[in-house]
Length: 301
Image (tube, rainbow, N blue to C red; front, side, top):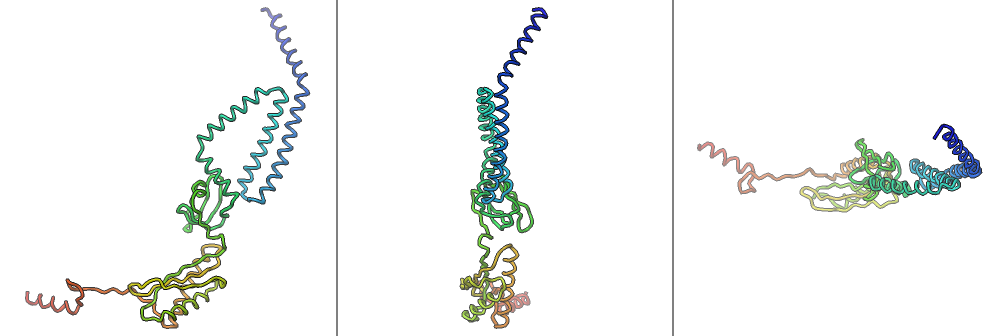
């Protein structure tokens, strides 16, 4: 093949390409219009869906993920339609098949991550707790700092940060102390055997009712629970307003101080533990009974 034949072949190819481009120009313009319209629809759909989902959840990460996914999906659909307009159906089929295989492989490789992700999505929609709530789950108790799409960040009452995978939180029990805005305190104590129990009950309930944070519309109850070694024990139960842990601690502290003050004023005793010591081998022998025997034996020796 000489140079002239080669140049003729090149010009023929270029002419064929130019003819094809000119023939496909209307389709190309239509494909561009389809992609442009798809981008406009995607932007409008993203804004509408964001406003609609905003009424369901205020989790910004979840909102951004969902709206971005829908936005990209609409644009991809528009691109596939544009490729079909350009008579590139085989290319579209190849891309979809490749995307399916890649998605299946990623699903198996990152199934734990996907489980945490889906758990985070469901919790963001159902909202079993809000940021700032005091919760307890999987041995972690503290204030919710943030709910990510992969994990829940909890600051313990001692200040440590616990990062709990969403799957563990979602699949196990969650105790939310802020759900009802109130919390019950079970305060245990004991009085001496010589005290009048009816008087003890009246004085104790009066003391608890004087605490500022106690809810007056909830029952305040006292139950004697057992005959202890040195005291008759009881538990007094009352409800307090609860927004944060210091509310609970302060109410319990004030109740203890109020009960102690009322007991002092009414001559009710909270007894110290009493222990009986045996000084003999057989037991039941007192110190003054054993001591002379030991001195007598020592003097004989």
